[in-house]
Image 1: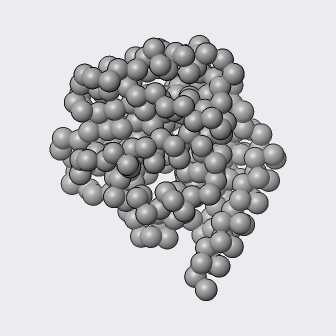
Image 2: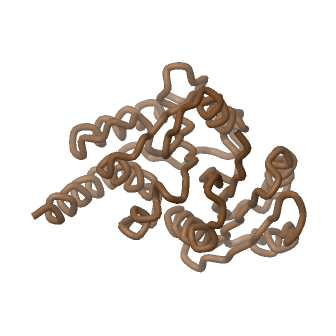
Image 3: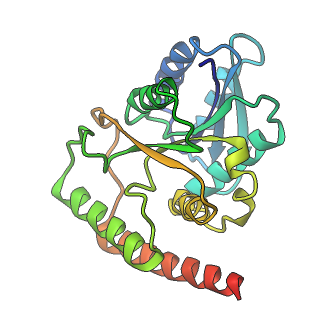
Amino acid sequence: MAITLSYVVPVHNEESTLERNVRRLDEHLQRYPGSRILLVENGSRDNSWELAQRLARPEGPVTIIPYREPNAGLGYALQRGVVEELARDDEPDRWIALTAADLPFGFTDLDGLERSLAQGLRPDIVIGSKAHRESTIQTTPTRTAATFVFRSLRRIIAGMKTADSQGTFFFRASAVREIVPRIAARDFFWTTELTFYAEQAGRTILEVPVVLEEQQRTSTVKPFKHGSKMLDQLVRLRLRELGARR
């Protein structure tokens, strides 16, 4: 099945590795003519914006488009990129992809999307999931503990069935068009809200296995700090949803 892809790539202080990873993504996407790479620079303190502008390419099999979002925060970059892409969506088989600038799973997540479509599946959202039993993940005990805490909180407080709401995402524009305006978070919780509202709306979510590559940077996850923040955000999200039902 021929598809085109629009990769939304948040860019925050990525000067040292951005060019290498964009070249790598660009080369891989040559297999999907008409695809796009959206580099959303947000609040960098280095030369990431200047580099993103130099990497821009308005024409070719794969276009590279730089956007500048003044607010630092992962969710700001994701919101800006997805909104921009939804506004220009003109192809029914275009998928929007959300990934980190260091391409943590290489293209094993995209391989999972391809396999699911080749099998005749019709998911609305495909997640490259670290929680999938066939995923190959080598991580620290601290990161493993944080993942367990986050997953447990999502299930207990919000009743979420999706195991990993912070992996890489692929989704059809039509599946999220009504959901994105509801997302309030502007940090790492953005994709959790997307997943929550997608589940509530009955969207089909498929988690696929990934292989975690050698990390290009040190993890910034702090289990207690981020676990406490996620607890607060999950409670607020659940209360908003209950309030909306009244």
